[in-house]
Image (cartoon, rainbow, N blue to C red; front, side, top):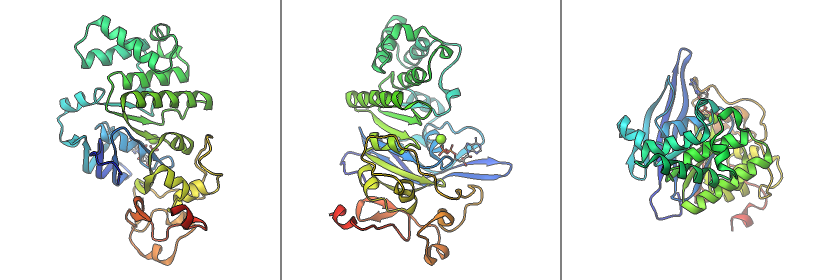
Length: 338
Ligand SMILES: Nc1ncnc2c1ncn2[C@@H]1O[C@H](COP(=O)(O)OP(=O)(O)O)[C@@H](O)[C@H]1O
Ligand SMILES: [Mg+2]
């Protein structure tokens, strides 16, 4: 669905991931297909629990126990990631795909200084001298907007502010210039000013190195600022998918519309959170056969109540995909589409 002729740097095909728990199988990711063009930014958004982090962890084969990939394919620039042996995957991770994890506990090692942690990823993957590793680590810390890299490098995680710790984690993830950078809620815990500064640093890194970015965030302001394309997740599946500009202008899925609808326009440079929608998503253990958004949907019809869950399909153009039997059209759409 990308307009680019280049083949995607990342492509998920009908990915299913689940957690096998005593209560039952939690179907965290239910048939997700996505692609990211080289140098682009694809955002995955949606409420908490919709499966965003599970997608990111699946890509790196890091789903924690009792998680597993049940089926589907993941291609990273033509490499079938699910067919790699553990050793091969370790070489891809960190070197060709960098990741900043949502869970801070997975982020920094409390007993190593910030500088040691950046150096470690460099020496793990490249045969360079200690001195060269140090030089490079200061360089990437400086690149991440840390003005006194020597000073920051000598600090331990507990001596870093939230914003600095996040920058150090991004520095580690980008130390080897990965082709793909996965950022899971990279700025969610930070205040607005620091968030904006970090997003600018990420932007600059991307521009300089042509990095492709998979950005996971529940913050639509971050999506609006960073993404070329957006996938809106609901109950482990993509509800709507397309260029960010189009989705913000003409959301067709009632879920996307609800998230955006009660809000002012999206092209303003302001921080936005998802609007809260009445009701709760379904249990991922007992997913309904029909549309998972049905109980909360303001547009549901009898077709929705009697049909299997709708599949993603093009709407208006090939660029925009929606999984809905009764998509939203509003006055003025025709002009906007023309
Ligand atoms: N380790 C786990 N064990 C059991 N269920 C999990 C585990 N991790 C995540 N889940 C479940 O998988 C679903 C998707 O979670 P997640 O991918 O973290 O969503 P998001 O990142 O969108 O908040 C949720 O229902 C969550 O409770
Ligand atoms: Mg998450």
